[in-house]
Image (cartoon, rainbow, N blue to C red; front, side, top):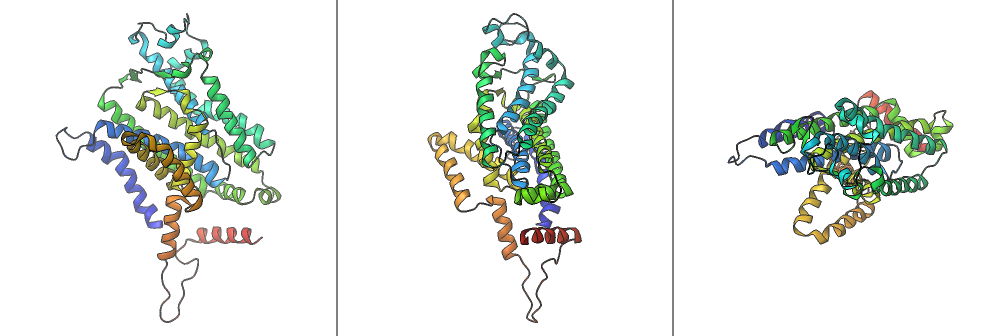
Length: 388
């Protein structure tokens, strides 16, 4: 697995950031060319992968199952969507500076909370700050009250439901059930242009690489070891002098920010955001992505988000009635047959069959052979904690 991290992950990053956009830029008659539709579809999948990385931090490494991350995804998406709606200006159907849905609802003046979204810097800041602030308030109240386990999952599910109901109301001036759509440009670039869509894809791929490196840094830091300890036994961490609530709040906010960034990248590539992306069902689907790929692995959520959504795209094109059955079957299969997910199961198989065999002289490889001193020390600490 160390060779995979050294060579496989950089090669994958080059493939996503450089190779695929280059193939898309080839002439239309080239046999190697990737269509604009396919590249746009991959860009949406990569945005989902950023979201899945955030869920893996809070669930896979900390053991806190959140069923409401669709809320943070939606907050980032709506922040970006509001700016894109204001960019339309008089190019709307009614030729009014107000968004079309406001004209339908007979809104005479742009609401006050919409006006700052004319600014690009404010929009980019809101994509990060709004999900982070919302997650901090919610997390502070719940973690300080020591709400955990299934109770926390139920509360986050209720949060997703209540937010979905609120965003469906026309009185919110956010488009109601129809959401925000009909975007013409993004930061001055025409959305219908193939070059713009290619640029959005590259931006999404770069953000995914940055998100992976940030999550990797967090999980390999001393704080990451505390997160794993909280997942294994929160009570022992509390008795050891640490504050589990502070660590959980930190990782919950980070995961919310990643979800918000994913939502902001999703909107200009798909062209629409509705409350349907905020509710309970999409939040549960996000958990399935991570479970299928393999929680607690970082690479697993990326594989799960990309693979499950690609499978959904294929099945809904040819057999739309089968998708929900396949999705349910995937979840049942993960729970019963490979709870470690695709990547976690692959790691176990590689570890089982890829170990060096003992020589005929009776030499046996030491458990810490081939590891750095830091990795051997970390493994020893984990073994001691399990022994206690």
